[in-house]
Image (cartoon, rainbow, N blue to C red):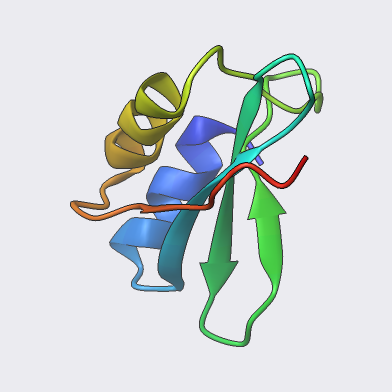
Length: 78
């Protein structure tokens, strides 16, 4: 989902959590959001492609732009 769509869901109190996760061995990171029923939504660009960030800090900042003040950062899985 795009930033705008996720911001709308956040304002409507439909999102419960923001999670920053490792994406690749090269150190990329993605941001996903969970709603009240546990469904997961990835932050995407306007073309529907996953947004990738070079580090966890930049990914966390994107999650905070949605509205969250706290973001869970998962440890490297690789």
